[in-house]
Structures are given as structure tokens and as C-alpha cells.
Amino acid sequence: MTFEFDSVGPKGTVTKVVQYTEINVKGFYNLGFGDKEPESGYISDLSVTNNGDSQKVLATVARTLYLFMERHPDAIVLATGSTQARTRLYRMGITNNLTAIEQDFDVLGLTDADWEPFRKNVTYHAFSVRRKPQQ
Image 1 (cartoon, rainbow, N blue to C red):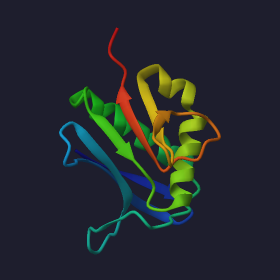
Image 2 (image 1 turned 45 degrees about the horizontal axis):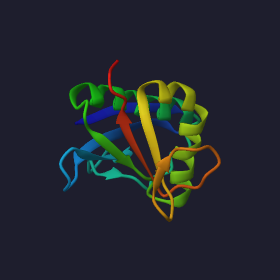
Image 3 (image 1 turned 120 degrees about the vertical axis):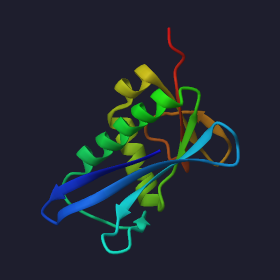
């Protein structure tokens, strides 16, 4: 599944793309995210937009997760930033919204040793998200 939306700010309008792609393990999906280059249509996960709307962009990415999970309720979504700084940004986004996220999802973080339940102020290499079973 692929979602497109626009970031609108001082740098103009930038098309963002969120793409969920099944990896080589059934039921596991990679969350890809980046800017769509207008000329080529290429999705760059290294672009830095600095359009002043990062919280809104992260909230929109989170919304796509809900929509994706409606179609794939048993999926496990894996996400990591293309750089350490981006992975840290994702961690901060999860941390800032953890109470709301944990109502619907189980979130794990990957340390040097193993996967563990997400904890604030811990450096992770990647994240795993799974929808909680419906009550």
C-alpha cells in the first residue's frame, strides 16, 4: 500500500510518500517514507525538507499505519530511519505519542541485544509495531 500527501510550508509544497512493502518474511512489512521528487517520481528517504511541519507529517504517517492495519490486521510493521538522526526523530515521535499509540499497538524497539517493549529515552536501531488484538 502506498500513501501520498503534501507537506506545505515555507519551502513550498513537497509530496511525501509512505509505502508498506512486504519483506521476505510473510506478514512482515517495511514502512518506507520519503519525499517524492517531482521530475523523476523517485522516492528519496534522505531528503531534508525542513518545511516546519514535522509533527503534522509524523501524525500523517501514523494515520497511514491505522489505515494499513485495517487491511492487514495481523501484520507486523518494521521501521527504521535512513540515518541515525531520523531513527532518533521517529523515536521522539513515538515517545511524544506513546500513551495514544499503546492504546492500539504493541511497539518494540531493537537494541544491540534484542527486541524489547518500547521504553522512553532508550536508543533503538529499529521499531516494530503490531496492532493489539481486538477485545
